[in-house]
Every structure is written in structure tokens, then in C-alpha cells.
Image (cartoon, rainbow, N blue to C red):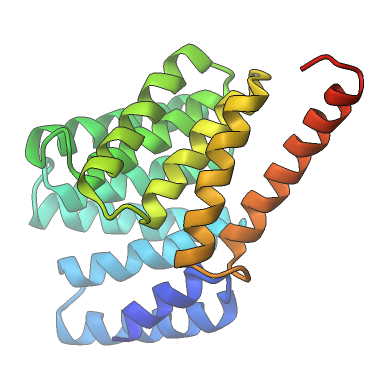
Length: 231
């Protein structure tokens, strides 16, 4: 329960409260399950994710690496939870600008999930989405777009019609289009994503505020071009 609430607070950017609960959860799990248990690894991974979001990379890396070591030892190198750890470390390296290292880990996580879980699983879609984000940052749009589209297709097919993960894929694809000045396509996707996010997360959620900022910037460009008849 502590870990669950800690992750919930993390998702709502309540970092101090999240850290307190995740640290309590880690201490309890180490005591109850042991230092090399998958439950302990889960909390280590979550706590590492919290530090990554705060930019505390030096604190995040040993936690994520420890979680990976536990999962590889106890669960095996090709377990979906091991893939989650690889994905987490990839996200950390991506945040630090270590894009080559991040790409290798994202691809490794994707290969595991496709093989073990299948090509139309939520975890596979997340791997595709994260790799697309990386390629977007490198302006590798031709590689990023099919990955983002595939992730969106998977999520639309297997998740609820208004699931936040579907909105995430919509926003990733919208950002790709925005970068390539495909403004009308980006606008449509942003509008769909915003509608889903507001219904599922609420208007005050950090994710909603972030995507609204992106959408406003896009709308300013569209309005400016409309005035000069350049759309």
C-alpha cells in the first residue's frame, strides 16, 4: 500500500510526500522480503524514477542499477520486470543526454517484451513510445514516427477508448508532427489527447498542464500563419 500511494503521489508531482512513502516502503520490503527480492526491486525502481524526475541523477542510478541486478538474478535476463528496469535506466540516461546508451537499453527492453509478452501488449507499446521519444530528440523523425504510430495503434486496440496511455501516444505523435511543422495534424492529435487527459486525470494534473502548454504554443504558430495566409 505504501508503494502504491507513493507512486500515485509521484505521478501527481508531490515529490516530497512520495519520497517519504517510497523510502518507508523500501525499508519494510527489505526487512520482510529481503535485499534481493522482486518486491524490493520494484520499490528501488520507483524511487529511482522519482529521483530522475527531480533531476537527482546520481541518486537515481544506483537504485535503478540495483533493481536491475536483483531482477536479472532472481527473475532472469528475459523477464518483463527486467525489461522494466532496462527501460527505467534508459530513461535516466536519456534525461542525462546519454542517448546512445539509452537507445541500446530501450531496444533491449523492447526485444524482451515483444518476445515474452507479444507485440500487442501495453508494456511493448510503452517501449515503442519511449524509443520514439528518444528518436524525436535526435530529430530522427523517419524512425520515430512509425514507432509512435504502432504504439498508438496497440493502445487504441487493447485499452479503453479514453485511457491515459492512449493520450500519451497521441501527444508523442503530435509532438513529432509539430517538430516537422505538420501543424494541422499535430493540432488534431493534441485535441484528442487533451480531451482524454482532462477526463481521466483532471485539469490540475501536471501532465495535463504540460500538454496544454505545448498545444498553446502550436496554436500561436497556427494563428500567426493564418494571419499571413501561410497554413
